[in-house]
Image (cartoon, rainbow, N blue to C red):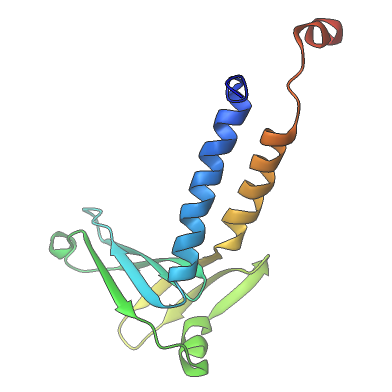
Length: 147
């Protein structure tokens, strides 16, 4: 058993599994809470990252006062209704695998939005970690013969 974690593949697989478990916990939390992180950029853009309804949303909107933006995180209880889903999907297109991009226009602002479902992070990571854990490392003899 002590030799099980010697190859770099298995170490990487364990790290990927740990990251997938953390992402899964955040994914499940997104159905109960809306977490928003505001990122200061120092320029005229106001980027926010929001986790809600099983997806990660990246929103960028222009602002007139860039120095007024500070880093902060908020968490609110999410009420899931069809009306909330309609507002979230307004102006969005789904070009590929549920990844949505779009422009949401309001009365005084325009917001550029990209929404990525959490499963697009978790499924590839799960398959990669499975392959790294299950695959047998090549012996030195096989490596030399293939060259």
